Image (cartoon, rainbow, N blue to C red):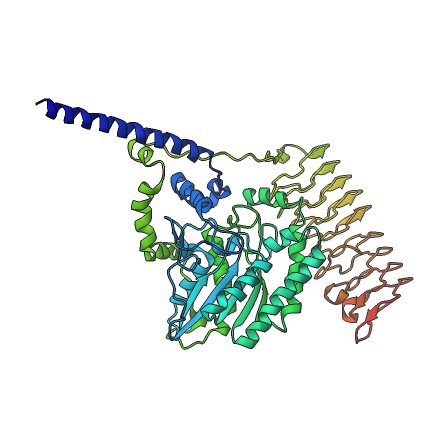
Length: 562
């Protein structure tokens, strides 16, 4: 009897100690969980339909993956990320290429690897594979994700030479730019030349060994003409204190030097120009929707270089709608679904909290130092001495307003209306004024340096003492405007329409006028030194005392020239 009691007591003590042990482990786990770094995507509207616990799990796994900028450690399996035995994200592959298979490797940094993707199949390579799977190809198309967080051209080219060639690739797609643009901030010219030389070597190697190489430059927040959301605008402001976007532009210009050696070169920085919804959850990483759009762009680029013996015509192929496609991919990736519904409850260090408590795992708030308060413009006819710098004000209505000494530096004013406004001594430096309406407005002694006014309506505008260094007037309408004495020599004016405008005494030196429309304009005593002139764009202009020294006039003759 005493022995039985002793065993019973020992068992109870064991149970008691077991729960103490579990409690201690859970306590430490909770401390670790709350202290671990957060991910920017946890607060992004892109993931508003993903539970907080799922986002926390995704973030934790990104920090748990063992990798360097040169390689990912093999055989790492998590709920949302799988790393196969060769260190590639995605399903298992063989070193030897299967028969009747066209093998594509995608190379890049964390955006290619899929930071923030909800599964392996919603990365760029995952969506690209899905695009090929929707069309029955012969041979089979195999897309392998060789992206590595932090990778740049030096580590990527070494990866290709030292590892990927062993897998007998037929095509290598490079999605590049961000990391090189960041690294190259101190010596951009040297870095850009090195970037070009590295990829030229790989392309020439491909020519010798029989594989194609496609080079692409990736988009980032602020590239192209994408309308920015509030959150994207915050990220864009983060980039303004760096040289990343200007360096990315230098890289894109190097693409032309690679055309002769590489299979194809493509600038994808404008991939989201027609997308109003939120794409970026930081300055360059994207959610599933962004990955899908890039994958579709890549599919269109790659298709001519893939053997095509299909049962469905690629030209008639279209992806499903965004919702249906993402749904189909989630259903297709049943392995991910099973792991999410079952394994996640066991792998998380807070499993006791998951089972015994109903509280969601906390999501940390993000501090934003931006003036989001929209001014009550409708209540006043004039604005004076206001500070709206770095404000998010798209579609604002300033029609017929008097704006005096107002600070709009770095503000986002896309598609706003300033028609018939009177603007005095105000500062619009580095603001986004694309697709705005300034028709019949008068701008006096104001600063528009480095402002984006592309695609804007500026008809009948009057400019007096306005600074326009670096201002972008691409494809803008400035017909019938008064621009006397204005310096446009450092502005971007390709596609701009100056018909019937007064540009007398203005400085237009150094421009290529083959895509600038000046018919009927007044160019008296203006400076056109070092320009390229297309006579048909100068019909009926007046050019008394105009400085044309060093200019090149293409074939043709001037008609109606005074």
